[in-house]
Length: 541
Image (tube, rainbow, N blue to C red; front, side):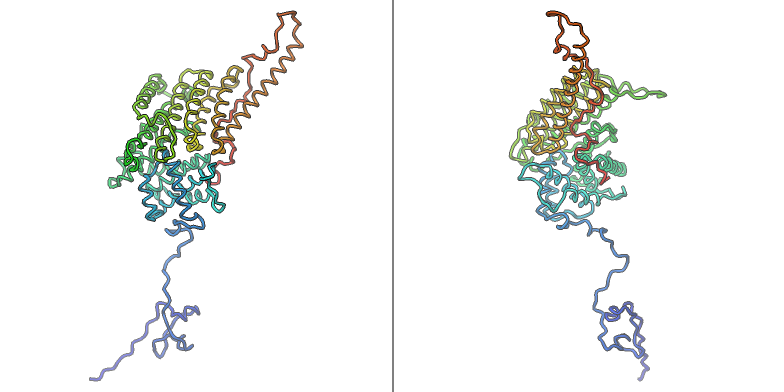
């Protein structure tokens, strides 16, 4: 049976053929029909559709998306350099700033799972930035960061670029860890503005996630992540208490308002090697010391700078009760006595794993001395008594092996700055000659301690020189005053014969000679707003 075959009408192409695409023309079918389009038919060329279609939608912008958060050898260096920076972190920084678990992190790195996200990239870059800054200030020729093509600032800038502005995008543990490590870098570089900014982001993210209360954490969280969050929380608490003392700001997450357990999972290597290598116990005791320090700082500030109580109906004088200080010191002393012996004497070793206990010992000694000084000076102590206490504490710190003091880097200067801040609070508008004599001994002892660190920590050498120069300036002032007063006394006195004459040497020892305020701005090490390095964080804030 015959049928009338109706020719199929070719529909308009959804995309141009290869030839029309290259000419930027629309692709239309022939009027007579046929497999090729009208343009290809007219030009006598094959009509093909072989090119790969591009994705529709907005094109990704440079620096956006996952492709931005990957390692670039041209910018970040080879894997060897990144590996070296990771090793430096675990060797020098990790015993104090243990915000990750070493084996877990190293296994991810070896499996090329780092970086795997924006947060993972931020954490890696923050670790590299801190380690690179350590290399930059390290005088050990075998470990000096000498590559002329890379600057530590590159890693810091990359880490900051990966930190989102929206707090709702900071809910990854790795992102908060990155913020914490950047805080340490800002502390060591004395970038005050950057430190405050990162602290602000940390507290905003903490409030958003209920970070200070474990009950608000995700119940499905892994054991490793829960442990890392505990480590991070308590390290950031310690950092804030410390900077509260040396910078004068408030503690924004007080101890009594936190509900986070102490870290409890020791490194697997220390477990395998035996209890002599377990160091987390010492780390947790340092946290106890900082908790005690927080409460003593409150008492210290109230004793040195009483609050304005006008129109306040509630009085808080009970916080200044002496029994509170005594209870804090009694509990910390009992806790220290119960520690294993490996946390009471620091002995350096060639084994980095063994040295981790030494790091805790050094940290315990420094922090414990600072707590004791705070407790002593929060009572009715005089400047002379405070100077004697500070001198004894510097002698105790000097007993720590230099290796650990150097590895503590600028954090060590901040501890000494804490001593200086406490002493400065005792200095009034004027300083008598007898008071200066005691203070002079402390300043020179501190300068000597700093000079022992000068071969690996340039800032320590500069701080020591500044202290010595300041002592020299005061000495010259006193010498000029004594010479002037002796000359005036010589012209004014009526000569007294024989042994009744008053010698100039006796007038030189006038204990009540006053030193003017211009000489009382003592350049303690680690001062935040000094221009020693010309760094204030303005570039990154």
